[in-house]
Image (tube, rainbow, N blue to C red; front, side, top):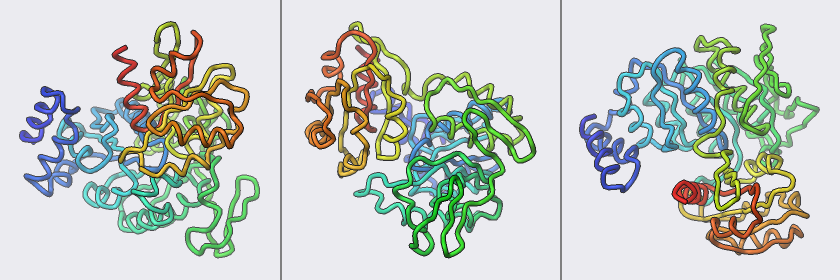
Length: 397
């Protein structure tokens, strides 16, 4: 732990990074069982899914702080090194809320034996790095089957999540909704078509939507015990309401009353810079993160009706090199708006916008693209590394 802290401090002092990853990596090299050791005697909550991990983890962190100190990887370092770094930085916290990349859940969960595992959603993302989402579901299902003491909180409206969650010894089902169905049209178990009837879904093989214990209805979260809690979030969009529903349900299992949990969530106005308005030369720039088709489908309705839109897309290793996902985003919804294609893959974005019949211009520098817009509100939607870079530049501007 001392070596990990020293490495993290050195990284920050030399401005080579935030220190979380190198600190965990150093500790792991010195003690391969460090993650298991540092997870003992804590109540650990792991949060995973294609979209919403950072937001839901932040929500649970804020809520569980009512019970005690919480260790959290709130810098977004969600692979084993970053998770270990978070535990090293807060070695005495009785609670830990840790977001985990879907592909590392089996190894991290085996080491930490969490009290709760939260499954938000599953859809395609970074196909060149991750592979097909069905392979991810199979790996999660196998891992969950070995977590005999873990409560798995899962969105029963997502057939892929439900398939994995049904392997749990202690499932807790939340009906949080699902707008994106393109990756769950066929059964994860047998490959036959999933039949939808309203919120219900089923397959001929017997896989079907589990009965929820918590149901999100608009802005209200209803429990099967008759409780009803208004969320009234400051964060925009249906997806954030779904994240909040899962967070409240999980916190309730840990002893936090739903109304107290919802009250804590109302204090959150931004998530690591997302949704916050940043001034830039007379423009109020709101930066949003969207990194895959499912995320874009939730983000597009959040955009201001009359605001210019800057779309910034990179394709570095952390984003995934393959940008074919752009063709599954309903950019047709942006017709009639001022749209600027930006980022390292601005040309790819421009081609997609052209086929969507969206008039646009190209400016590869996202900050310069914002300055091309008239003074007033501007929405800048970026994928992972583009979001990180532009957020840093706006802070320094």
